Image 1 (spheres, rainbow, N blue to C red):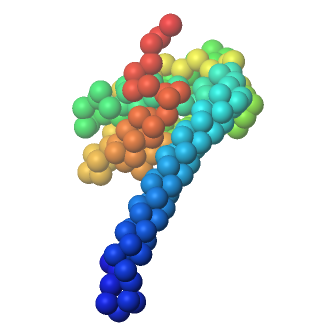
Image 2 (image 1 turned 30 degrees about the vertical axis):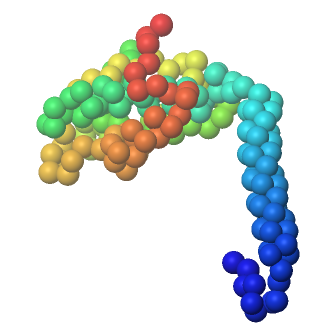
Length: 173
């Protein structure tokens, strides 16, 4: 590192410079360790100070619904897809579910097509939702089935595994 001839340094100067360099490297390593520890402590403080999610909000309910519906959907063969059946006002309505949405604090929407192929959207308060998941014959089996609310099963699986609020399979209780 140090050219003794070029700078006309004595052996003592060289040893001193190496010692100083070694001390600087040690100090930098100590600072790096302190910074890592400080970041870890800050992350813990931030995590502990976060306000817990309200489990009664529509987006939390949406996450649970998406998981239940897609678990059912995935269990069906390629000729069937998930649909839902609603019983309201003495009538039964069955439709293919294409997507689900939510609007906090309390609205959930189901979009899809009814048995006649007409576009439908059901908007309900989370306290009123009562749906029966049913296996419906797919209208077009050429494209692969995709999960409800996601572009692909890989995206769905990644999203669910990243979310601590939505395990792959939720208990019914």
